[in-house]
Image 1 (tube, protein in one colour):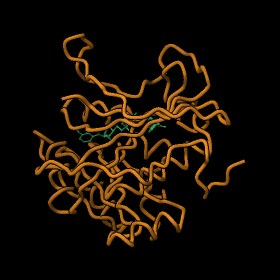
Image 2 (tube, helix red, strand yellow):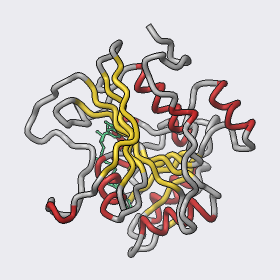
Image 3 (cartoon, helix red, strand yellow):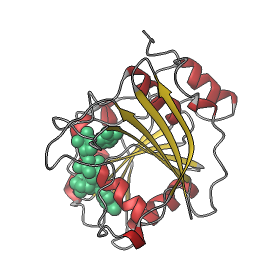
Length: 251
Ligand SMILES: NC(=O)c1ccc[n+]([C@@H]2O[C@H](COP(=O)([O-])OP(=O)(O)OC[C@H]3O[C@@H](n4cnc5c(N)ncnc54)[C@H](OP(=O)(O)O)[C@@H]3O)[C@@H](O)[C@H]2O)c1
């Protein structure tokens, strides 16, 4: 068995990837999800149980490439969110390149109705920031601020573009990792902000009629509007029966 802290010989070395330079107005944006063989990303309310320890290791390797790790509030409420690498070697590799050992965790919310008891708000081993929509009630924003985590208000128009611009110019982020969920992924794909999509395909059929897919897009599906992908790498893992896929978005 592969320990949590050790790369698997059957998995790609994602932590060694050199991402391209970002465009001037936002970070380079890459999305990472784990999905069942029938296209589901949620089982019994969370993603837990969909990915192996090796998949979780790859998730942390991808975090190590990022300056900011972003989640939607739905994911924070369902599973918690953090930017932890949980591996001194990954942290040391970042530090050697002049980066903070751990990326900044970020969450975006319209409601500001967030679980303040979660590590995202209580932990001191990673920095974190909340992006709150224009309509987020101020009293709730005040309770978030009382945890010590900063809150940045988003405009009512162009919220995602503003968030990405803020991450780039105020946080200095050159690479931003999105770890879901589907609603946030949809906003980013719809806006044309995603550069790469990492997908772990797991050896399970989940079933169900309403189970979530990796991207919940507001735009109606149409052949003219699909996002075209180019496969950059594919690694089968005979130990876990998972397939690790890396796509670039075709412009
Ligand atoms: N399989 C996987 O890899 C994976 C990864 C991540 C998550 N998940 C699963 O996905 C589920 C959650 O997904 P989800 O689609 O329900 O939620 P989500 O995408 O995590 O979060 C959606 C929420 O984010 C906020 N948000 C999104 N876009 C925004 C914008 N433009 N401006 C302001 N706020 C914005 C809103 O928060 P408010 O509601 O607070 O207004 C919105 O309801 C969970 O079950 C989780 O376990 C699976």
